[in-house]
Length: 298
Image (tube, helix red, strand yellow):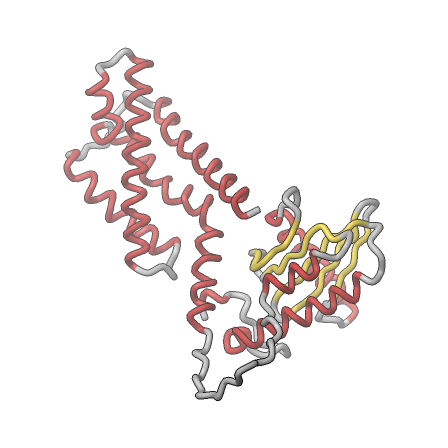
C-alpha cells in the first residue's frame, strides 16, 4: 500500500513539473523586463531554495534543507533543458542556444520555474516529510531502558511478544469481514494502517475527521464536548470511529460482519492506548485534557 502511495505522489509531481516546462511557452520569447547575468542565477537560486524550504519545513535540519535545495536546483535545470528542447522544436531555433535559454538565459521561464518548484514539492511530498520527521522525533523521545544485571536461567521461559502499533492494527484487520484499520491523528495524517490494497487511506482519514468535527459541533448544543465512538452503516459497509487518546481508530468492515467485531475493536484500542502511553507517554500527555495533536512541536 505504501509503495502504491509513493507512485501516486511521484506521478503527481512529474505531471506538475511538466507544467513548469510547458507553460513558459505562452510568453516566449518576450523577456518581460527581466535582466540578470546567467552566472548570478544559480547562486541566487540556491539561496532562494534554502530560504523557502526553511519557511515551508521549519522543523527540518539544515543538512536536509540543503539537500532538498540542491535537488531542486538540479530538477529546475532538467526542466529548463526540456523547455529548451521544446522552443527549439516549435520555433526552429538552434538546439544549443535553445538549451542555454531554457537553463539560464531566458529569465521569465527560469524565474517562473524556480518560484513554483518548492511549492509543488511541498504539495506533493509535504505530508510524507512531516510524517517522517514526526516518527523520528517520537523515536528519539523514547526513554533509554535501564540496563540491569540479571542471572539468566539455563532454560528461560518464553516471554510474550511485545505489543506494537502494527500488531494492534493487524489484530483488528485479521478479523473476518474487516477491510481496513487506520490510526489517524488530529491533522488527518495516518500514523499506522493495515488494510486491503484497494482501500485508500488518504481518503479515509479526512472522512473520519469530518465526521468527528460535524458531530462534535452538533453535540455541543446538548452540552456534550467529547465523542468516544461513532458508528455508521451503509448498504455495503460498517464504519467505526473510536477515540484513542488524541488519535482516532478507524475500522472499515463489511456490513455483514458479526457484532463480535465490537469486542475486537475494544481490545485493539486498549492495545494501542497501552503502546502509545508506554512509548510516548511524555509527548502524549494525560488522557484527561492535554492536547498534543501536533507532535512536530514536541
